[in-house]
Amino acid sequence: MSDRKPAGQFLDAAIDLLHRVRDEEEAAVEAAGTLLADTVEEGGRLFAFGAGHSSLAAQDVVYRAGGLALMNLLAVPGVVGVDVMPATLGSALERVDGLATAVLDSSPLRAGDALVIVSLSGRNALPVELAMTARARGVKVIGVTSVAYATGTRSRHGSGTFLKDHCDLVLDSKIAVGDAELTLDTVPAPFAPASTVVTAALLQAVLATTAAVLAGRGTEPPLLRSGNVDGGHEWNRRVMERYGDRIFYRR
Image 1 (cartoon, rainbow, N blue to C red):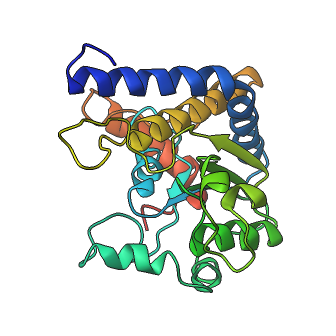
Image 2 (cartoon, rainbow, N blue to C red):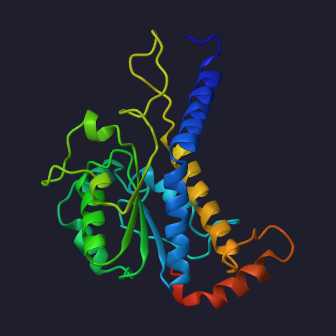
């Protein structure tokens, strides 16, 4: 047991997980970043989705200074985020069969686009069906999930499958089932989740790869700059004018 206080123990655990994904997911991150670069060069659009707290990592790559301007959030009312009341409704909606098809029918996603689906467990109906249906429609799917859930839990989808089973590429966050890094004799339940830290870092690593791959091919990456630095708004306006047909968070 570490002599550190809980705060230090949590940070150590998060750092250890980041080291693992850096070392063990290097090839997958490179492949995912290259897939997104290919999509950009081929005229496709980029989307990210996550439900509940998994949406935090998805939102982190949308309209972000230093990020790709072409990354759009695939929004599902009541599911993306925890602002719905009651918050438990979002969890319930994620388990509804058929919702994914309705979402895709009303979204701008089309063949040739790329969709990043973030789901820690990857076991609920919405992310599983979203991946299945999107791929059937010609969308390239990248799943960001904890593969451990596929052996430590049972799927809630009728097929018995998980998100990881329906993706072109999978990034494993290495998060343990239950998403709690710490235990104490005086605390009755495990605590201190690290999935947001790790998943957000994984996605930023992917987009960093995308930018580098595009630049290496002679294509200027469509990056946004901070609006809080001089010239930032002017830079972003030019990027958005150039790629306006592939940016949906302005409409």
